[in-house]
Length: 430
Image 1 (cartoon, rainbow, N blue to C red):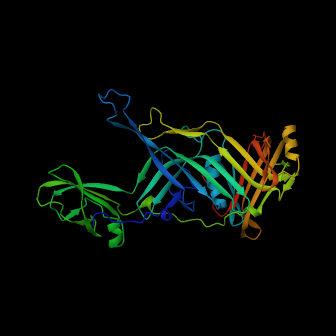
Image 2 (tube, one colour; image 1 turned 30 degrees about the horizontal axis):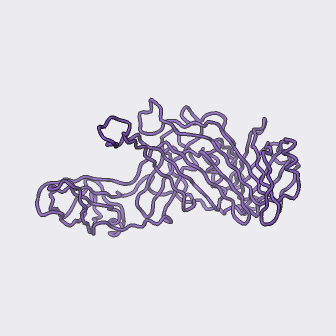
Image 3 (tube, rainbow, N blue to C red; image 1 turned 135 degrees about the vertical axis):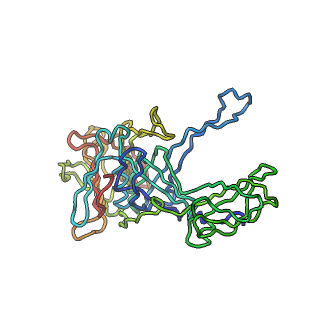
């Protein structure tokens, strides 16, 4: 055979993160501690910064060289059946300040926007992530990932949803190897220099050799080589069909996955129940006293959807003095939040608040089942001070509705937003 066929179904992808422990410094990988049950379309990618030399005096009409500026990391993480741990992980790294206290057999995590910087290189804490692509094409680790934007939604007839935009410095590593071996053109086997090939069975090892190529000494072109078996020995031996009839020494390239260790071994998954929108309670217009919501009124059947967007406007940057091919700092340019209601237009109360330019409080409680008697898995969002920006009326399913947009404001005593998560995980971004 020339190439083995491996499983590249996206359902076999895995995502692991350092949810509990933040990186001690930028571009210093942290241990992966949690396997995340993200949506199928959640992918982190390395984005190479390649620059063709179109603006240089090449003597040609078109570019003839590609300059390599390194790369960045970007992507999104989406949880369409969001669990308390998903809120805690994403918001701990997005907001940046976490205080955790024991709560029965579990823990309560209080998350707030960080004031100031984590250190001289970072405004927010960073985490390490890793992905397995298929089963498997490769595994890749991404150092210093930052949560730039988070969007939480509570739509009718479904589950709580949360998604995030991830930006990374561009420092990546993977579990692939490309090895060059000098041996006769008519060789029937290739011995690797020092490594074996990953896989417990002969079929797995064969799948983990992804290509063998040879430099044809006559044409100086790289050609594919058929291979049929891979030994379990270290170093590994690959059985090939001799590509030529002469004993002329030439170069073979072997593309393969070596045995896994360290970060390549996935951590365990935390099991939690997803949050149902039908169990969400929302209070509007009261006052937050630091511990509980006082006054206000409960929104019930009139609310169709609620969404909250939090944006750090954070960008990893390369600066002089980095000494590496990736970003060496990441700062916020100023946080911004938006809160939206889609509600039945049953009264003119919010329109009046818009007219009067009132300051309101919004409190949301999303509860799941108990993890012990009297203590629930839950997420609590508190916005101590908001103002109505707009409240246009529309028609939805033959009924009147209004799309209310709130400005999230920073309160003198309690800040702009407080997130409280209850579950059985001991810490986040610690």
